[in-house]
Amino acid sequence: MNHYQKVAEMYRSHPLSASLRSIRHRPYFRSVLYGCLLIASVYVLYSFVNPTYPVSTYSSFSRADPFSGDLAESYLPVDETPADVWRGRAKSVKLAFLHGYHGYERYAQPHDEIRPLSNDFIDNFNGWGVTMYDSLDTMLLMGLDNEYNRAMPFIEKTVFTLPDGEFAPFFETVIRYLGGLLSAYALRKDDLLLRRADELAEKLDHVFATPSGFPLFGVNPNGNVVGPEIGILAEIASLQMEYTALAKFTGKKRWWDRANTVIKALDKAELNKTGGMFPIRWNLTSAQPFDTHLSVGAQADSTHEYLLKQYLLTAKVDKANLIMYLRATTHIITELLFLSPKRHLLYVTDTTFSTNEHRGRPSHTFEHLSCFLPGLLALGAHTLPLDDLASLGIDLNDLGNESMFGISGEGYKLLAGYNLKSLHMWAAEGLAQTCWLSYADMPTGLGPDEMLMHTAGDDRWGKTVDGFKDGGGYLWMDAIEKWKASGARGAPPGVGDKTPVIYTETERLRGSGRARDYSIRKSGYLLRPETLESLYILWRTTGNNKWRDRGWKIFESIERHTKTPSGYASLRTVEVLPAVKDDDMPSYFFAETLKYLYLMFIDTDPIPLDKWVLNTEAHPLPVIEWSQAEKDTFHIP
Ligand code: DMJ
Figure (tube, rainbow, N blue to C red):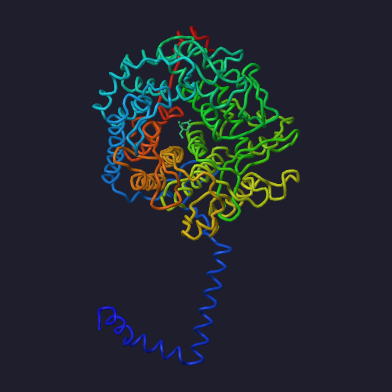
């Protein structure tokens, strides 16, 4: 008798097996046994078709009082991870940075980016060494002086020129190169960095040769420019922070004028057709919107981000940006946020208006790029007196306009009656939860680039149960009332922890399975930062360690599935194991992804959110207070 036969015999002769055998042979027990099996199979089948998920619990939600907006320490789970473990995690991130950056230095410097599978290089952002520029301030924050010192001679020698017929993409050049130089200058005060930043801005300056003062798409430092008359929102209006910081550091009025022209044009734009929010396409001659496509994702994201951040960067004196931020977020919250039908995932999508349609039509696309929004909303709730706008002389009622399409002005009135700070935090936590789940649902633990959310009718987060026109209450208004009445139990719709659903291989191949409430449109993971950015800000603003824990899980997945001998590689798909890599390591991986992870795990806060503001490429800039002399020179009221 071999080993397996012996084991089988042992089980056969076990008294329990014997009694089960005897039960199986008695007709009464046999029917009970088969009955139970039948019930169990029906239950399993039913759960597949109509799955239930644990209801969000209050304990997983970090705010106690929707009206005061105060953090309730007693509700925060205790961090069970010892401090030295967090320190070790921060060190692991630093080692990851070194691994990737040394790969770049060895195989690609001074070109733009390394190809981490072939160890080739690519010049996709002017060929001036974008990885170095984007990495400088992360090195300084991580205390990597050797790497910083090795980069400086290259920074000094870069020739900001391009062959005829080639153009620097203005937006990318500003957020990566200029932002990188200014941020490193703010941290290290090395004059070379500022000199190079100023010189680069000079080389790019022809790009502003439009009647509106909005920049064109691209510029050759020889003076030639390129780009259509219809520009893209994110590309024409994401320079305010960099040019304001440059003006402050150099004392040059021209740089402030560049920023201020854009701010003023945005402020004067006609937004009645889009509910007070900026659409994606703009006419660079008239400085007016060209379409009605509203989004916080690709081609739009950073402009919405810069409304709040420019206000914070300029020490909260520039009210125009604040008001534009309040308008944009009111429209986003009331019209662009949706709940999925089964898991009640809160997500943000884009909408388009057909002629004279009162309400935009949602695409239900949910982009990884949009996952910066929860962090932005949390940052706003943390830094603005949203629960007391009157203290700033602002009444939300006045911001709405009865003739607006998309939102009738009524939305503003409704929101004005409630605690805006809590609403923004709820939206932030619900959205961050969905962004995190898009990672946790995948076998790689990394999130896809784009999802198509399932819908069952009009699931706007802010929709009334009976329909807007019938004057019913908003869902969340209902939720607040119920919450108050119930003594604060249960999270608002879409907020709170949910269980991940990882598909089996059969479900993946079939393209459906247990309800996840979405299908995947673009399944790659491009080493993007947005979800980590929001986890970082939520952790800082709520103090709830669950966000930080999730950051660590994502880092573990990055290490496990994207690492190569010379760096880290984007994934072609997050849906299969072993993960399939792409020959690509974007510079923002060093500027943003690894920086947010590091800042999340260290036990100090070198760039507090009330003293530093991160540009859209995560380059921190210090809050700027204008002196009277600067106000006079720059004509700042
Ligand atoms: C970054 O370059 C910036 O954050 C930009 O604003 C959009 N997203 C990429 C990374 O995903």
